[in-house]
Amino acid sequence: VSPLLTPKQVARAIGVSESSLKRWCDKGLLETVRTAGGHRRIAVNSVLTFLRDTSRQPVRPDLLGLPSNVGQGEFVIDRAAELIFSAITTGDDERCRRIVFDLYLAGHKAFDICDRVITPVFAKIGDCWECGKLQVFEEHRASEIALRLLYELRTALPRVPEDAPTAIGGTVEGDPYRAATTMVEIALREQGWRADSLGPMLPTATLCDAIEKVRPRLFWLSASSLQSPTEFVDQYESLYQTAFRSGTAVVVGGRALTEEIRQQIQYSAFCDNLRHVVAFAATLGNAAVRSA
Ligand code: B12
Image 1 (cartoon, rainbow, N blue to C red):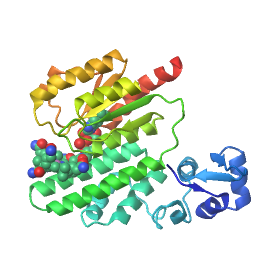
Image 2: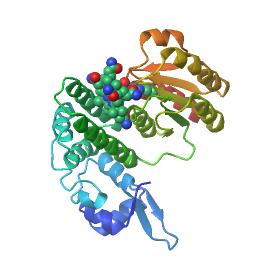
Image 3: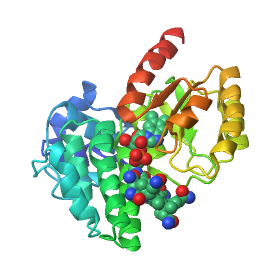
Image 4: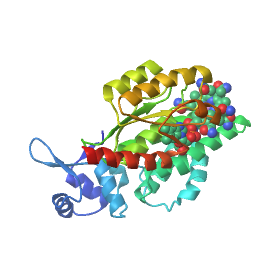
Protein backbone atom coordinates (compact mmCIF):
# COMPACT_ATOMS: atom_id res chain seq x y z
CA VAL A 1 0.00 0.00 0.00
CA SER A 2 1.36 3.41 -0.96
CA PRO A 3 1.70 5.84 2.01
CA LEU A 4 -0.68 8.83 2.13
CA LEU A 5 0.66 12.40 2.33
CA THR A 6 -0.94 15.76 3.09
CA PRO A 7 -1.11 18.42 0.33
CA LYS A 8 1.47 20.42 2.31
CA GLN A 9 3.96 17.53 2.27
CA VAL A 10 3.42 16.93 -1.47
CA ALA A 11 3.78 20.65 -2.22
CA ARG A 12 7.16 20.68 -0.42
CA ALA A 13 8.27 17.48 -2.14
CA ILE A 14 7.62 18.81 -5.62
CA GLY A 15 8.45 22.44 -4.94
CA VAL A 16 5.15 24.25 -5.57
CA SER A 17 2.80 26.25 -3.36
CA GLU A 18 0.17 24.42 -1.37
CA SER A 19 -2.58 26.40 -3.11
CA SER A 20 -1.36 25.35 -6.61
CA LEU A 21 -1.22 21.81 -5.42
CA LYS A 22 -4.76 21.87 -4.07
CA ARG A 23 -5.93 23.37 -7.36
CA TRP A 24 -4.33 20.47 -9.26
CA CYS A 25 -6.03 18.04 -6.89
CA ASP A 26 -9.40 19.66 -7.53
CA LYS A 27 -8.83 19.52 -11.30
CA GLY A 28 -8.14 15.78 -10.96
CA LEU A 29 -4.51 16.06 -12.07
CA LEU A 30 -3.47 14.36 -8.84
CA GLU A 31 -5.57 11.51 -7.51
CA THR A 32 -6.81 12.53 -4.06
CA VAL A 33 -8.59 10.69 -1.29
CA ARG A 34 -10.48 12.29 1.60
CA THR A 35 -10.08 11.45 5.28
CA ALA A 36 -13.17 10.86 7.43
CA GLY A 37 -12.89 14.55 8.41
CA GLY A 38 -12.88 15.65 4.72
CA HIS A 39 -9.16 16.49 4.44
CA ARG A 40 -7.29 15.76 1.19
CA ARG A 41 -4.66 13.01 1.18
CA ILE A 42 -2.49 11.96 -1.76
CA ALA A 43 -0.87 8.55 -2.17
CA VAL A 44 2.86 8.53 -2.97
CA ASN A 45 2.25 6.44 -6.11
CA SER A 46 -0.17 9.10 -7.41
CA VAL A 47 2.51 11.76 -6.88
CA LEU A 48 5.03 9.63 -8.82
CA THR A 49 2.53 9.12 -11.66
CA PHE A 50 1.91 12.88 -11.76
CA LEU A 51 5.65 13.63 -11.88
CA ARG A 52 6.13 11.14 -14.73
CA ASP A 53 3.14 12.44 -16.69
CA THR A 54 4.22 16.07 -16.37
CA SER A 55 8.00 15.47 -16.74
CA ARG A 56 8.73 17.12 -13.40
CA GLN A 57 11.46 16.20 -10.94
CA PRO A 58 10.87 16.29 -7.15
CA VAL A 59 12.84 18.93 -5.25
CA ARG A 60 12.62 16.96 -1.98
CA PRO A 61 12.44 13.31 -3.11
CA ASP A 62 13.16 12.18 0.47
CA LEU A 63 9.66 13.35 1.44
CA LEU A 64 8.32 10.79 -1.03
CA GLY A 65 10.48 8.04 0.46
CA LEU A 66 12.98 8.18 -2.43
CA PRO A 67 16.75 8.64 -2.14
CA SER A 68 17.48 12.34 -1.57
CA ASN A 69 19.46 12.73 -4.81
CA VAL A 70 16.80 11.29 -7.16
CA GLY A 71 16.13 13.66 -10.03
CA GLN A 72 19.63 15.09 -10.22
CA GLY A 73 21.19 12.42 -12.39
CA GLU A 74 20.97 11.92 -16.10
CA PHE A 75 20.69 8.21 -16.43
CA VAL A 76 20.33 6.65 -19.81
CA ILE A 77 18.61 3.30 -19.77
CA ASP A 78 21.35 1.66 -21.85
CA ARG A 79 24.06 2.61 -19.36
CA ALA A 80 22.02 1.93 -16.26
CA ALA A 81 22.73 -1.82 -16.11
CA GLU A 82 26.46 -1.15 -15.98
CA LEU A 83 26.04 1.44 -13.21
CA ILE A 84 23.72 -0.75 -11.16
CA PHE A 85 26.03 -3.73 -11.53
CA SER A 86 28.90 -1.89 -9.88
CA ALA A 87 26.62 -0.53 -7.14
CA ILE A 88 24.79 -3.77 -6.41
CA THR A 89 27.91 -5.92 -6.18
CA THR A 90 29.38 -3.59 -3.56
CA GLY A 91 26.10 -3.55 -1.60
CA ASP A 92 25.27 0.10 -2.40
CA ASP A 93 21.52 -0.15 -1.98
CA GLU A 94 20.87 3.60 -2.16
CA ARG A 95 22.68 4.09 -5.45
CA CYS A 96 20.70 1.26 -7.03
CA ARG A 97 17.44 2.79 -5.80
CA ARG A 98 18.46 6.16 -7.15
CA ILE A 99 19.25 4.84 -10.62
CA VAL A 100 16.04 2.82 -10.87
CA PHE A 101 13.80 5.65 -9.63
CA ASP A 102 15.53 8.19 -11.86
CA LEU A 103 14.66 6.00 -14.81
CA TYR A 104 11.11 5.52 -13.57
CA LEU A 105 10.56 9.25 -12.99
CA ALA A 106 12.03 9.97 -16.42
CA GLY A 107 9.05 8.01 -17.81
CA HIS A 108 10.58 4.61 -18.55
CA LYS A 109 8.12 1.76 -18.11
CA ALA A 110 8.76 -0.40 -15.06
CA PHE A 111 8.65 -3.54 -17.24
CA ASP A 112 11.30 -2.07 -19.52
CA ILE A 113 13.51 -1.22 -16.54
CA CYS A 114 13.15 -4.86 -15.47
CA ASP A 115 13.83 -6.37 -18.92
CA ARG A 116 16.60 -4.02 -19.99
CA VAL A 117 18.30 -3.14 -16.73
CA ILE A 118 17.61 -5.46 -13.79
CA THR A 119 17.54 -8.77 -15.72
CA PRO A 120 20.89 -8.12 -17.48
CA VAL A 121 22.37 -7.19 -14.09
CA PHE A 122 21.21 -10.54 -12.67
CA ALA A 123 22.66 -12.34 -15.70
CA LYS A 124 26.04 -10.68 -15.22
CA ILE A 125 25.99 -11.45 -11.50
CA GLY A 126 25.36 -15.12 -12.38
CA ASP A 127 28.25 -15.15 -14.85
CA CYS A 128 30.62 -13.50 -12.35
CA TRP A 129 29.59 -15.99 -9.65
CA GLU A 130 30.11 -18.90 -12.08
CA CYS A 131 33.64 -17.84 -12.95
CA GLY A 132 34.57 -17.00 -9.35
CA LYS A 133 34.73 -13.19 -9.73
CA LEU A 134 31.94 -12.80 -7.17
CA GLN A 135 31.63 -14.70 -3.90
CA VAL A 136 28.38 -16.43 -2.94
CA PHE A 137 27.66 -13.79 -0.29
CA GLU A 138 28.05 -11.02 -2.88
CA GLU A 139 25.63 -12.76 -5.22
CA HIS A 140 23.10 -13.27 -2.41
CA ARG A 141 23.42 -9.68 -1.19
CA ALA A 142 22.89 -8.43 -4.73
CA SER A 143 19.78 -10.62 -5.13
CA GLU A 144 18.35 -9.28 -1.88
CA ILE A 145 18.90 -5.67 -3.01
CA ALA A 146 17.32 -6.38 -6.38
CA LEU A 147 14.27 -8.04 -4.82
CA ARG A 148 13.76 -5.11 -2.43
CA LEU A 149 13.98 -2.77 -5.40
CA LEU A 150 11.35 -4.75 -7.28
CA TYR A 151 8.94 -4.61 -4.33
CA GLU A 152 9.50 -0.87 -4.10
CA LEU A 153 8.88 -0.42 -7.81
CA ARG A 154 5.64 -2.37 -7.44
CA THR A 155 4.47 0.04 -4.71
CA ALA A 156 5.29 3.02 -6.94
CA LEU A 157 2.92 1.88 -9.72
CA PRO A 158 -0.44 3.58 -10.19
CA ARG A 159 -3.38 2.03 -8.34
CA VAL A 160 -5.12 -0.75 -10.25
CA PRO A 161 -8.81 -0.15 -11.04
CA GLU A 162 -11.32 -2.25 -9.05
CA ASP A 163 -12.79 -3.82 -12.18
CA ALA A 164 -9.42 -4.69 -13.76
CA PRO A 165 -8.93 -8.19 -15.18
CA THR A 166 -7.14 -10.49 -12.75
CA ALA A 167 -3.95 -12.48 -13.15
CA ILE A 168 -2.05 -14.76 -10.79
CA GLY A 169 1.13 -16.76 -11.13
CA GLY A 170 4.27 -18.12 -9.53
CA THR A 171 6.85 -20.88 -9.74
CA VAL A 172 6.48 -24.62 -9.11
CA GLU A 173 7.88 -26.74 -6.26
CA GLY A 174 11.68 -26.87 -6.30
CA ASP A 175 11.98 -23.56 -8.16
CA PRO A 176 13.14 -20.90 -5.65
CA TYR A 177 13.52 -18.07 -8.17
CA ARG A 178 11.55 -15.03 -7.04
CA ALA A 179 12.61 -12.22 -9.37
CA ALA A 180 10.95 -13.28 -12.63
CA THR A 181 7.51 -13.97 -11.11
CA THR A 182 7.70 -10.65 -9.23
CA MET A 183 8.58 -8.88 -12.48
CA VAL A 184 5.63 -10.44 -14.34
CA GLU A 185 3.39 -9.14 -11.55
CA ILE A 186 4.89 -5.66 -11.96
CA ALA A 187 4.54 -5.74 -15.76
CA LEU A 188 0.88 -6.73 -15.62
CA ARG A 189 -0.02 -4.31 -12.82
CA GLU A 190 1.58 -1.54 -14.83
CA GLN A 191 -0.77 -2.44 -17.70
CA GLY A 192 -3.72 -2.08 -15.32
CA TRP A 193 -4.18 -5.74 -14.39
CA ARG A 194 -5.02 -6.88 -10.88
CA ALA A 195 -1.96 -9.14 -10.86
CA ASP A 196 -0.70 -11.05 -7.83
CA SER A 197 2.38 -13.19 -7.70
CA LEU A 198 1.78 -16.15 -5.39
CA GLY A 199 5.54 -16.46 -4.99
CA PRO A 200 7.96 -19.36 -5.58
CA MET A 201 7.91 -23.10 -4.76
CA LEU A 202 4.19 -23.82 -5.08
CA PRO A 203 2.90 -27.41 -5.38
CA THR A 204 0.83 -27.92 -8.54
CA ALA A 205 -2.24 -28.88 -6.47
CA THR A 206 -2.29 -25.52 -4.74
CA LEU A 207 -1.82 -23.67 -8.03
CA CYS A 208 -4.88 -25.55 -9.36
CA ASP A 209 -6.82 -24.57 -6.22
CA ALA A 210 -5.79 -20.94 -6.76
CA ILE A 211 -7.00 -20.99 -10.37
CA GLU A 212 -10.35 -22.55 -9.36
CA LYS A 213 -10.86 -20.09 -6.52
CA VAL A 214 -9.67 -16.85 -8.16
CA ARG A 215 -10.74 -17.72 -11.74
CA PRO A 216 -8.18 -15.30 -13.19
CA ARG A 217 -8.23 -14.15 -16.81
CA LEU A 218 -4.53 -15.02 -17.00
CA PHE A 219 -2.29 -17.43 -15.13
CA TRP A 220 1.50 -17.24 -15.47
CA LEU A 221 4.17 -19.74 -14.65
CA SER A 222 7.84 -18.87 -14.45
CA ALA A 223 10.19 -21.86 -14.62
CA SER A 224 13.86 -21.21 -13.93
CA SER A 225 14.77 -24.56 -12.42
CA LEU A 226 12.96 -27.91 -12.70
CA GLN A 227 13.91 -30.81 -10.43
CA SER A 228 12.44 -33.42 -12.76
CA PRO A 229 11.35 -32.31 -16.23
CA THR A 230 9.30 -35.53 -16.68
CA GLU A 231 7.36 -34.96 -13.46
CA PHE A 232 6.91 -31.33 -14.41
CA VAL A 233 5.38 -32.23 -17.76
CA ASP A 234 2.90 -34.61 -16.02
CA GLN A 235 1.90 -32.16 -13.31
CA TYR A 236 1.74 -29.23 -15.67
CA GLU A 237 -0.95 -31.05 -17.66
CA SER A 238 -3.38 -30.92 -14.69
CA LEU A 239 -2.54 -27.25 -14.25
CA TYR A 240 -3.27 -26.49 -17.88
CA GLN A 241 -6.54 -28.49 -17.81
CA THR A 242 -7.71 -26.64 -14.69
CA ALA A 243 -6.93 -23.32 -16.34
CA PHE A 244 -8.65 -24.38 -19.55
CA ARG A 245 -11.84 -25.33 -17.65
CA SER A 246 -11.97 -21.92 -15.97
CA GLY A 247 -11.33 -20.01 -19.21
CA THR A 248 -7.92 -18.84 -18.00
CA ALA A 249 -5.10 -18.10 -20.45
CA VAL A 250 -1.78 -19.70 -19.47
CA VAL A 251 1.41 -17.76 -20.08
CA VAL A 252 4.74 -19.46 -19.45
CA GLY A 253 8.36 -18.34 -19.48
CA GLY A 254 11.75 -18.96 -17.95
CA ARG A 255 15.07 -20.57 -18.82
CA ALA A 256 14.01 -24.06 -17.65
CA LEU A 257 11.37 -24.34 -20.38
CA THR A 258 13.66 -25.73 -23.04
CA GLU A 259 12.38 -26.35 -26.51
CA GLU A 260 12.16 -30.06 -25.68
CA ILE A 261 9.83 -29.37 -22.73
CA ARG A 262 7.81 -26.81 -24.66
CA GLN A 263 7.12 -29.42 -27.34
CA GLN A 264 5.41 -31.56 -24.69
CA ILE A 265 3.17 -28.99 -23.04
CA GLN A 266 0.29 -26.70 -24.01
CA TYR A 267 0.06 -23.00 -23.26
CA SER A 268 -1.55 -19.82 -24.57
CA ALA A 269 1.77 -17.98 -24.92
CA PHE A 270 5.45 -18.55 -24.24
CA CYS A 271 7.33 -15.36 -23.43
CA ASP A 272 11.06 -14.65 -23.54
CA ASN A 273 10.63 -11.43 -21.60
CA LEU A 274 8.15 -9.03 -20.02
CA ARG A 275 7.64 -7.10 -23.23
CA HIS A 276 6.07 -10.25 -24.67
CA VAL A 277 3.63 -10.75 -21.79
CA VAL A 278 2.64 -7.08 -21.94
CA ALA A 279 1.84 -7.45 -25.65
CA PHE A 280 -0.10 -10.67 -25.07
CA ALA A 281 -2.02 -9.28 -22.07
CA ALA A 282 -3.02 -6.19 -24.04
CA THR A 283 -5.14 -8.33 -26.37
CA LEU A 284 -6.73 -10.26 -23.47
CA GLY A 285 -7.08 -7.24 -21.20
CA ASN A 286 -9.01 -5.28 -23.79
CA ALA A 287 -11.25 -8.26 -24.40
CA ALA A 288 -11.87 -8.61 -20.67
CA VAL A 289 -12.77 -4.94 -20.30
CA ARG A 290 -15.00 -4.94 -23.40
CA SER A 291 -17.00 -7.97 -22.28
CA ALA A 292 -17.39 -6.65 -18.70
C1 B12 B 1 19.74 -15.06 -8.02
C2 B12 B 1 20.13 -16.46 -8.46
C3 B12 B 1 19.94 -17.51 -7.57
C4 B12 B 1 19.26 -17.33 -6.23
C5 B12 B 1 17.74 -17.05 -6.41
C6 B12 B 1 17.26 -16.16 -5.27
C7 B12 B 1 15.79 -15.84 -5.35
N1 B12 B 1 15.16 -15.78 -4.20
O1 B12 B 1 15.22 -15.61 -6.40
C8 B12 B 1 19.54 -18.70 -5.52
C9 B12 B 1 20.60 -18.46 -4.46
C10 B12 B 1 18.35 -19.42 -4.90
C11 B12 B 1 20.14 -19.52 -6.65
C12 B12 B 1 20.39 -20.86 -6.51
C13 B12 B 1 21.02 -21.65 -7.46
N2 B12 B 1 21.51 -21.24 -8.64
CO1 B12 B 1 21.12 -19.50 -9.37
N3 B12 B 1 21.09 -17.83 -10.12
C14 B12 B 1 20.66 -16.66 -9.76
C15 B12 B 1 20.89 -15.60 -10.86
C16 B12 B 1 22.14 -14.81 -10.51
C17 B12 B 1 19.74 -14.64 -11.11
C18 B12 B 1 18.39 -15.33 -11.37
C19 B12 B 1 17.33 -14.31 -11.57
O2 B12 B 1 16.45 -14.13 -10.74
N4 B12 B 1 17.39 -13.54 -12.68
C20 B12 B 1 16.48 -12.46 -12.98
C21 B12 B 1 15.30 -12.94 -13.78
C22 B12 B 1 14.24 -11.87 -13.86
O3 B12 B 1 15.78 -13.20 -15.09
P1 B12 B 1 15.20 -14.40 -15.94
O4 B12 B 1 14.98 -15.57 -15.08
O5 B12 B 1 16.06 -14.53 -17.12
O6 B12 B 1 13.76 -13.86 -16.34
C23 B12 B 1 13.53 -13.01 -17.47
C24 B12 B 1 13.07 -13.81 -18.69
O7 B12 B 1 13.59 -15.11 -18.72
C25 B12 B 1 11.59 -13.79 -18.61
N5 B12 B 1 10.83 -14.73 -17.80
C26 B12 B 1 11.23 -15.64 -16.90
N6 B12 B 1 10.16 -16.31 -16.43
C27 B12 B 1 9.07 -15.81 -17.02
C28 B12 B 1 7.72 -16.12 -16.89
C29 B12 B 1 6.79 -15.43 -17.66
C30 B12 B 1 5.34 -15.76 -17.53
C31 B12 B 1 7.21 -14.39 -18.51
C32 B12 B 1 6.23 -13.60 -19.27
C33 B12 B 1 8.57 -14.07 -18.65
C34 B12 B 1 9.48 -14.80 -17.90
O8 B12 B 1 11.35 -12.48 -18.12
C35 B12 B 1 12.34 -12.14 -17.15
C36 B12 B 1 12.57 -10.64 -17.26
O9 B12 B 1 13.23 -10.27 -18.41
C37 B12 B 1 21.09 -16.51 -12.12
C38 B12 B 1 21.84 -15.86 -13.27
C39 B12 B 1 20.91 -15.48 -14.45
N7 B12 B 1 21.41 -15.57 -15.63
O10 B12 B 1 19.78 -15.12 -14.33
C40 B12 B 1 21.74 -17.74 -11.48
C41 B12 B 1 21.61 -19.12 -12.17
C42 B12 B 1 20.24 -19.31 -12.73
N8 B12 B 1 21.82 -20.05 -11.05
C43 B12 B 1 22.53 -21.04 -11.38
C44 B12 B 1 22.89 -22.10 -10.48
C45 B12 B 1 23.91 -23.09 -11.00
C46 B12 B 1 22.31 -22.19 -9.21
C47 B12 B 1 22.50 -23.32 -8.17
C48 B12 B 1 22.54 -24.73 -8.74
C49 B12 B 1 23.75 -22.95 -7.38
C50 B12 B 1 24.11 -23.96 -6.29
N9 B12 B 1 25.19 -24.68 -6.54
O11 B12 B 1 23.45 -24.10 -5.30
C51 B12 B 1 21.27 -23.11 -7.26
C52 B12 B 1 20.05 -23.94 -7.76
C53 B12 B 1 18.78 -23.61 -7.01
C54 B12 B 1 17.61 -24.42 -7.51
N10 B12 B 1 16.93 -25.10 -6.65
O12 B12 B 1 17.34 -24.44 -8.69
C55 B12 B 1 22.94 -21.00 -12.85
C56 B12 B 1 22.10 -21.99 -13.68
C57 B12 B 1 22.90 -22.66 -14.74
C58 B12 B 1 22.05 -23.60 -15.56
N11 B12 B 1 22.67 -24.24 -16.45
O13 B12 B 1 20.87 -23.71 -15.41
C59 B12 B 1 22.77 -19.53 -13.19
C60 B12 B 1 22.38 -19.26 -14.66
C61 B12 B 1 24.11 -18.80 -12.84
C62 B12 B 1 25.21 -19.12 -13.80
N12 B12 B 1 25.56 -18.26 -14.73
O14 B12 B 1 25.80 -20.17 -13.68
N13 B12 B 1 20.37 -18.81 -7.72
